[in-house]
Image: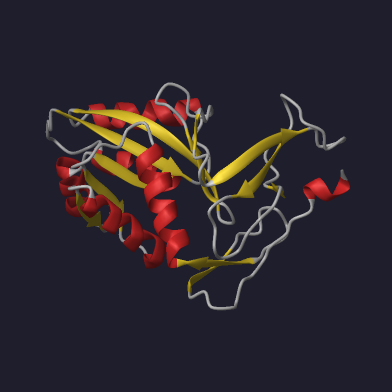
Length: 232
C-alpha cells in the first residue's frame, strides 16, 4: 500500500523527441522538471481544453493573452483552427486590445487573476456589446464573491458571462472542468488524460473525502503514477 503514493516520473530519452521542458511550481514543496513531447502537448489541447469541456463547439472564436509559454498555446491554437475556429490574442496591458478581444471572442481562456483583471479593466467603458461570452480559467481559485464581481463587471458593458473553472496541475496537465453553476465541482473529468483517485491521506485507502492522486494516461514524456497533487 505504501507504494500507491510514490511518484514515478519516468523520463524517456530513447527515440522520443522532447518538445518542451516545463518547470513545475513549488506548491507541493517538491519542484521538478516535466518532459513533454509534441504528442503530449497536442493531447492536452485537444482532449483537455477543447473536446471534453462542456462549452467548446466547433467554429468558436477563442481568445487568450499573449504569453511567453508558446509550446502549449501553439498546440491549442492549432486545434482550434482545425475545428474551424479562430484564435485571437490580446495584450492585457492595452485596454483597447482587451475590449476588442471581448467584442470578438466566444471564449476567453486564461489564468484566474487575468480574468478578474480584465473584468476590472472593461467595467468603466461606456459601451453596450449586447452579447454573451464564456470565461474559462485555471490557476488559483476564485471565490463566490470574485465570480459575482466578474459577472457584474461584464454586465456593465452589456456582456453576459458564463464562468468555468479548469482543474489542472503543471505535472499532469488538464484534469477536469467545472460546469458554470459550481466552479469548485469538477464533474467533467478528462479521463483519457488522467486516472483520478481519492484516498484517505492517513490510510492511503479509497475514500469519498480525501486527497487526490492522479495517474497520467496517453503520456509519452514524463509519466506519473498515483501522483499526490496535495489537494483535498
